[in-house]
Image (cartoon, rainbow over all chains, first blue to last red; front, side, top):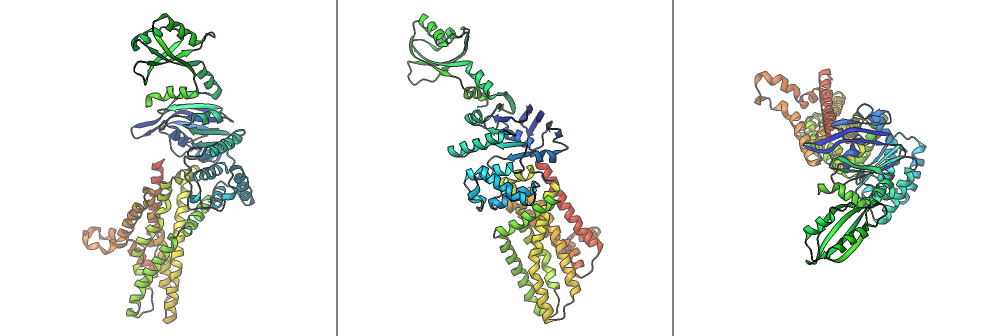
Length: 315
Length: 234
């Protein structure tokens, strides 16, 4: 459906998006994840034709962004970050203006606005000035705007930012309902949101794609590894690290900050293998030494850990 | 073409949603009415020449105030992104906003016809120069609107847009009165650049294709500059 090749965007010297290749298929709900300033919004703005890429190209269906931008814009419904709408207009006036620009005619304008106001829960807000609306309602007007022409592709930039938990659930519900028939691309930096709504997750960091996969696959690969937090006494950090490093299942050993100066805290990331409980491996190892074990607990790895590992260097 | 008319309609309606329209129209009528009628009875002649004489200067301040929001406001609140990601061509956006602004300028001129009617009632008014004057006023208004839109597309700050627009329009209004500052050889060219010079020609009732060409060129340059400025932003 959408094909991006070598997509690159510079802001002066800064490379915001760095040679991205991505294919988005029909009917997918794709979550674009990344820390602040990773290049999510820039990528989205290039997809919608608001920015022109410095290098590379985007094709939507058979249309290319250089020559047939207008055709592409007709297929895309877009909600920019924080829904910048015309604040002086009434909600109804705004939506009918959008409908007219989108080429909806005559009586259909009213029916379409009615449908969307029911879908987005705007029926009581139609006569209000957009400037008077709360952030959640502005977001809903933005969503109605994006869905006006029943677009094949819906692009939402941080659709739930600044909303209260109830509104977040409602907007997610709407997105999932739409996502059954359409291709939806949404950007967010909230992981639980991507986990709850998206079929596929792409993580971007410093303008590059660092992970790309089905949400379930990513979650599965996360659960391949476990994190053990241990606290030991009467030893030195060096000997702890040299003791654990050689073990086959151990991926990484990291010293953690501890409140008690006598206790050394470590985080050990282990691979699950052959059904052996990693806790057992670690415990057996400690038993061979004369350290005092004061703490040992296991944490399952989540998407959040993957995200943090992949995007950590930027911090 | 259809989308152009929707944008035009929206921009024109927008003026009347906020108090700006009423304030600008009142100030315009107050200033022109006062300046015109204070000297009208001194000359004791039934003509509107004094009104049209001061129009370029008044327009140089009023029109940039009307056009300053057309792009700067959108850039500032970010709705520019929404406008540009809808299936509309740049030319539709620019021309829609231009004609929206021009329509407002014409609305603002409409009540001044009462000046002509008043004068016609108390004296023997020659309607030729009056019609020429209004034709010239619309052309002048179009040229200044194009310049104002260009200024507005340069910045997200409406005040800066107003100052840039006024600076250009004011220069065009007075440059033909500043000829003694320029070398002899350039006089013809600089005189030709002045908007006031061309406007006064038409306001005399002489509609010359050179004057019309001048205003059309200024419109084209202003709107083309806006197009370039929009291209630069993507």
